[in-house]
Structure formats: C-alpha cells, structure tokens
Length: 353
Image: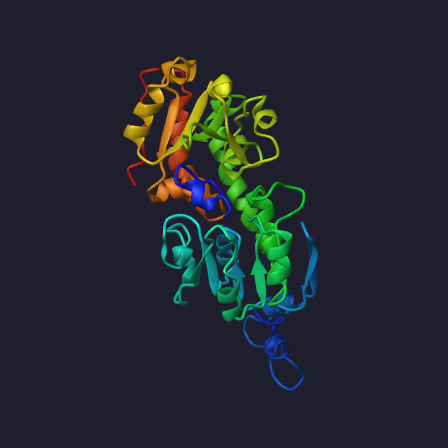
C-alpha cells in the first residue's frame, strides 16, 4: 500500500475460536447475584455467532474473540476504539511501538503493547501469526490474496477485505463497522463512526468554500503518483466537501492510485492539491522545476499543501482510521482552508505540533 514516496515497499503490503467460559458468571445465575457490567457482557455475547461477508466468501465467528491479530494495515485502531487490545498488529507507518500511533496510544491502558508483524512484500508472516494463538484475524483494510486467506484460515477465522471495494479501498466507516460486528459491538462501532462524521460535518460547515471546490492527493513517487476515489486519503477530501478531478478514476483504472503520464499533469490543476512528501523543501523545489507542473494555476495561485510523511501528522494523513482522523483533521483542515481562501498571499503553513 503506497503511503508516499517510501511507499514502494508497502504496496504488496492461531487456533480455533475460544469459548467464553466466563459468560454465565458475567451474566449472573439463580445461585449468585449479577456482577457489575453483566449487561454489557451479556449484550456482547448475545451478538454471536456472527457471519461477515468479504472478498472470499464469508466467515463465521462463533464467540467473542479474545486474541485478535490485525493483518489489515489500520485495523488495530478500530479494535482499540472498541475497547480491545490486539495481541498482534501489522506495521505500516511510523515504526511505533506495537504499531499504535500517538492518536491511539491512550487506548492501550495498562495492557502490553501488541507484537508487531511485518509484511515484507510476500504477505503476512504466517508462522508468527500462528504462534500468537489468535481466535480472530482481521484483514479488512488490506489486500489478502485467496491463497493467503486460505492459509490464515487454518489457524483462526479470517475477515478479509470487502469485495465491493478495491484492495485497500474500504472506507474507514465500513472498516469500523465490520470490525465492530466481528467483535460483537456493532452499535458502539456505529456510534464511533457517527462521532467522527460529525467532526467532518463541523469542519465542512466552518469552511463552506470546501463545498464544490476540487482537490486531489498525490505523492512524487517515481514521477507523480495520484490517489484515486477509492483511496482513503481521497475520501478525506470528499468527506470534507471537495470534489475529485473528473477523469481521475478513468486514468488510474481499477487501483487505489497510479502514476500519471506527463500528458495528464492537468489532473493536478485543482483548487487545492495535497502533496505527501519526504522533505517539504526539497520535494517542492523539485516539483516546481517541472515546467508542466509549475505552469498550472494551482501552483501560480499558491494553493499547494505539503505534508511531510516523516512525522506523526504525515503518518495520520495516510493512516485514515476512526482514531487517527480527529487528530489529522485538526491539522489538515487549516491548511486546506488557507489553500482555498482565494488570497494568493496566504501562506499554507505546516502544523507546529
């Protein structure tokens, strides 16, 4: 999964389910009084068994999962937001302990950070996943192949990416709700989604100039790489009210993004363009040396937003999860507002923290 110019290495980016032996005690019985929190425990356990459809068919989860491994690159955030800590996560951006970003770190509580797995380009680390003895494997924001899904399914129920979207194309809303259903917390997941969507709505209301303005996200990887409508980063823009270039998906094809030819540099001539770069000074200077690009109105009107991929903010722009989005919006929205305010003299400045 390409997150930026370092994204090339990210493109290709366990026993049977455990029985809830404590469910009866949590829900109470005729012989002993109900314990505090029994209503929540009863509600969660009553959600099972649950069956979820995905790209490779459907998966049934028989009881509440306790040992969760996330193969999906951002799935851990939804798990944490729902009050559970995975035993294993897959590293993508930032090199954070447990693969838990700063926007989600407080959700660990006092529990041990998850074991971090790596996708080296050949797929999930099957043996290490099996050693974690999971009772659920989540690969919702991912790109499992059929073979990888079949292999992982030998160790635990696997929820793969939804079939109605490109690989790595599931919207964060659906990702959160699918994971909520898998954990027996469908209602809470919907509430979490609603809360973040209210943040988007507030930002759009406070910045009415976003509505109908055009925007695009790109990275100067191997030329110019542009993210399409099914990419999570592009959905941040559309959820704020921006529209994407009309021919974007036609040029990209059935992918989350693609490199564009020099002849289609016009796709970048939007009301605002967000660049995810390694070094804001060096990469902007290099882009501006490109005569086709520097001649675009978006450049002449100073409507570029440069996001350094190396910091927490840059990582959050690519992460796009129910927990990272509020953190990211607080920082990105002011930049976008400065870019589309109609005043060439307004500088689009990077967040200070």
